[in-house]
Length: 287
Ligand code: PDD
Image (tube, rainbow, N blue to C red; front, side, top):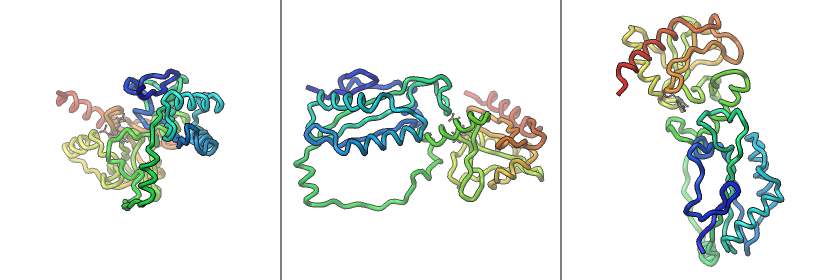
């Protein structure tokens, strides 16, 4: 008998188990998981794992998809169907399937729930334990690689949700030194009090925006300069203009930061012009 997986209420052959491509776990890492060791077909340290499961879900404003009692029965049924005595049971719960949008789905959707069971060769693991293992060290980079356009977007999704709840369109991340890094799905710019265009340099831990790069060329064509220097939210509020760039937003004027107006609280002339220039260039060069 082959392996059996549980997917959203059904037990299916492991090789045929799948979730939708717009599952938020797949697209944003907007999901949590838990793993129990199995001894003689029974869940080890069950209470501790259930407690952490509920905590992880709670931290992401998600409920347990079913009662702990019901979930325990489903986990045990998955183990039983796989006839595993020694191994592991893996549970993943995502926010569900919704059209791609960083913020949470506006209408509640059914959470996705997946369970797999795997076998462990305890004789082999005991032999390994008897010999001991080596480790290597690596810098703590979880997650200092925002330059990679990875789908590990959970912090971005949470930030975007925060923006939406505040009636804003984007969230700007602020680093330990108080400087804006970038938006949840865009790069951040201002036209400072002296009228200089400013955006964060790409040596910082940010995504190297393609729209940002192209806009740099357009700005140079206009005979203007960009100061690749970080700014604080206060500087943004005191700036003449602010805007964001990205394939989704193009060049989008920002009129308030944390509810306080930027400049006159309306789209600035330079941002508006750069939007027009960018769209013209994009249309002319699109293939
Ligand atoms: N986001 N920074 C982040 C974190 C982004 O996700 C994006 C783009 C950008 C701008 O990059 P570009 O100019 O290459 O689109 C900066 C896309 C649009 C998205 O997630 O929908």
